[in-house]
Structure formats: C-alpha cells, structure tokens
Image 1 (cartoon, rainbow, N blue to C red):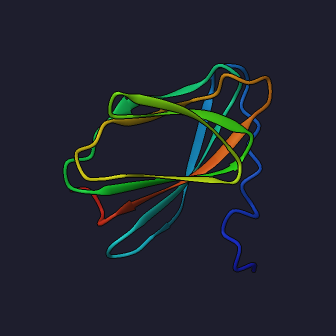
Image 2 (image 1 turned 135 degrees about the horizontal axis):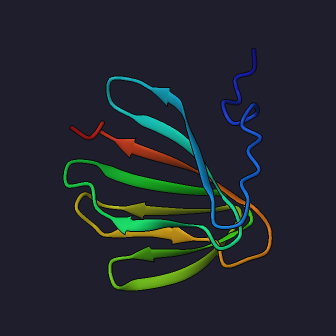
Length: 107
C-alpha cells in the first residue's frame, strides 16, 4: 500500500472523455482524481456549501472561475470559494489530470 493516493489512478480517457474516481472521503473532505482527454471538459458548476480546490497534476487545463478563464499548467492549484462558478477543459492534445478536493462534504 502506498501513501500516494494518486499512484494507482492511471486513467487514459479518449478524446472528449472525462474519467474520475474517488480517492478518499472523510467526515469533512472528498478527494477525487479526474482525467480529461483532449477536448474534454468539466462543465462550469457551483457548490453552494463546499469550497473546491483543483490541483492540476499533469498537462494543461483552461480553468473557468466566475467570469475569468486562465490556462494552468501542472503543477498548479486553483481555489474556488463556496458558491463560485468553476469548471475546466482540456484544449491540448494529451490527457490532463487533476485532483479535486471538496471541503466540507457537499450535502
């Protein structure tokens, strides 16, 4: 067993596909891994009761936050406060991987 929760996540989604898995869930945080194939996107959305953190681990993602967009290349981290619109898309040719933390757990 490895302490590195991401070490076993080796997803390789096809073009426009998103693969995700839960890495851990405790009483106060949900941690997911998300792989975005070329052209894939996580639609902009909000969490009214949870802070959301994207940790870009591999590749480059265009992250939307509120009305702004920015290309973030790994390693990078984006914090979205409760209720703030956020999403991400992969405009590159390679798979991009991020982890997502939600704190506290959304209801």
